[in-house]
Length: 294
Length: 126
Image (cartoon, rainbow over all chains, first blue to last red; front, side):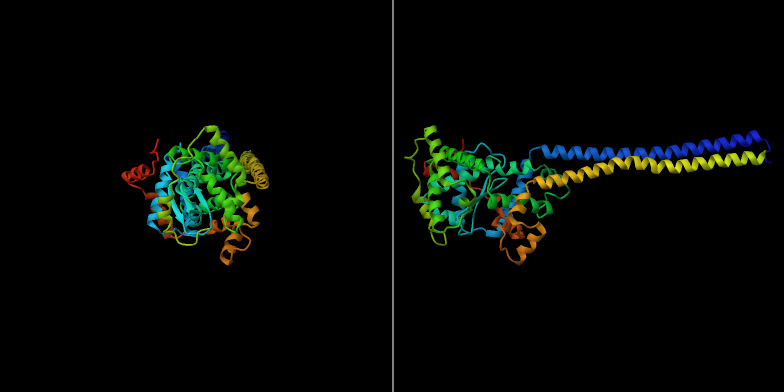
């Protein structure tokens, strides 16, 4: 039966209006609440990124980056396949690295098949010396000095500090697949590192620091502390005669470095000049090196 | 009288619907406005950062090229690109990666290391 009471009709209209008003308010509230959630999530993500950017790199992150840098160095130069020499470099490198105050990353040594006179260290303890640099060494204490200098860069986290300083780069490390070998992120990261260490050079302070650390490790291992200064003097002469090395191009002048190292030797009273330089056993291994001596 | 009620009722319903329809875009616009401002601020900050220069700024300074351009250059020849940039452009093969893995797992047996150190009158780990 159709209602003819105007009051009842009016009430039903009011009810409809109330329902519509609630629905309308709900829609608005939902839109605002959803937006609030989205913004909260964005803020949380941003906070996490900032936290990541400010946190130091973990050893695993450092190793992943170093592994990629090492792979590029190997791809460019190729490893020098000489089992006896690789073993010898690992024995000398392992002896000086054992004296480093940093042991969490581990140290790995290899020889690159290049006539240029260079040595490289990548984060994570990957240390390379070229055939050319080995040719330039005259004894084991000089090789120990060069390797100890590279160990010093790893122990001092010189490259890692540069990466950590770039907050945008650092924050990107947590992106999906960023740390996968060959990822776009890794390509950019390793490109930056290689340009820094080979084309631009580290800060002079980092080089001096690696010199000091290296001398300390070599001396603590039982080698004479002046192995690196003797090698650098010969490197200077070799590059003047046309030898190729990025060390003289990107590192502080040899004269300054040697002066600082000699000052340290005097200040520390390291009277170790009578220690064996181990030229004989170095010569036996060096004989197996291909290529001309610089 | 009946028609007047009906007219008023539908008028009110219509007004509520229109109001609700207007409120949603308004609410969204209110929330989007700060977002747009934030986006603008972000892009300004990014531009400032680019000008200031981060870790990668040196890459461009050395090569004077974008990374995409470098890849092309590396394929065509590396004239004018630093050696570090050239090495950075290298694409390691699986053999290269295996060589690095072998480098990592290489170890000297402790007795051999001990003998090497004793022969050279060197000191073991502290």
